[in-house]
Figure 1 (cartoon, helix red, strand yellow):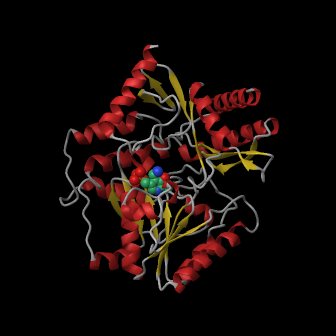
Figure 2: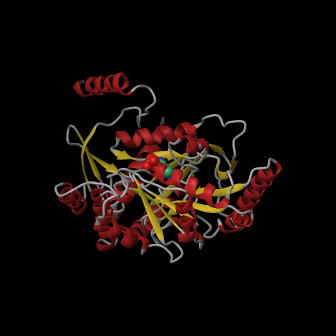
Figure 3: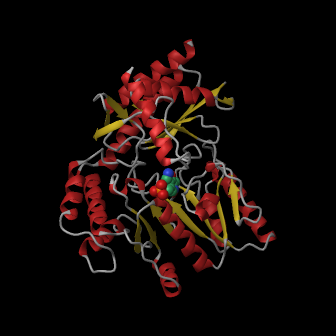
Length: 426
Ligand code: PMP
């Protein structure tokens, strides 16, 4: 049919123009042309329920954000080497969401740039070069960060100063102690190789590792060990930040910790490229004395206006509370589904960040990797968009815009039920 031909043509054109390093989602890639709230529309104007895109956190094309961008774009867009109030208004509003110890924020355009800056600050302030990350982590695109992003599957350099630890697995009383033990082993290994630790960099909801939010506070012993060895705790909030976990603005709060450095991005501008690193002022005092930083687009007035508008919508529409409420409802519905489908080994997460782990034979069974891919594609055919994560790609990753309501959760669960039944029958 026409659509299949045009999809094939577009894929060929993409390959010809963009080259071979890009990847598409789904066996039948989707051509989206429009978005509104939790809905995405293809060229035939068919709606897809978006249960995956955390960037459009306040809903696709939210008018308040679109207008803020348009208004400022029509007035002026420059950079941070001129005085401009908007970036200061934004910094003030953003810093107010952090604990008092976090007193400065520096703006970038991507989460990668924010993490790369955090590595620089950590190196400068500790004098160390060693970093610890988790085994299926993703932290960004720069040369330094690909080493800390083993989910890319690239070989590590032999003389690397990066040490990888297993992500925390299922929630138990000893989750924190096991994680801390692995972190201490990594610190010992650095010591034996004359590498001074600079820091621990973790996504505080372990998104690409397979979504691990519980038990609350499990990160604390590991962070204590890193600090005792002279390293910093860098919280990558690119995934859990901005209210997604439902109770607090930031994922680290779930662990009762205050990080030394915090990085954020994705949902920050609801699709406009806005990212940042927030920090303890004493660290930036040291960094600023020895280094300087200018990011051409970071903190520009249009991006800052977008960022302010996003914070305003989160507050005005009570989206953090909605993430808590709808997230809890969705987890409950998914657990009902678990009772009917043996393939579902565990449902976990926080707020509207949910992982559904698929295994053959329960919690300790073999990962259902192929089945997870099949379910993701079957849902796409049923016009519900999700993806899968974890070392075996067997954790369905559900992470919708924060304007997701109970009706949307019902639709997702109904379609997932259908897909699981169809898979079972096949
Ligand atoms: N950290 C985490 C946890 C991420 O998920 C990502 C993006 N997937 C990044 C950092 C990098 O952000 P960006 O793509 O904006 O550079």
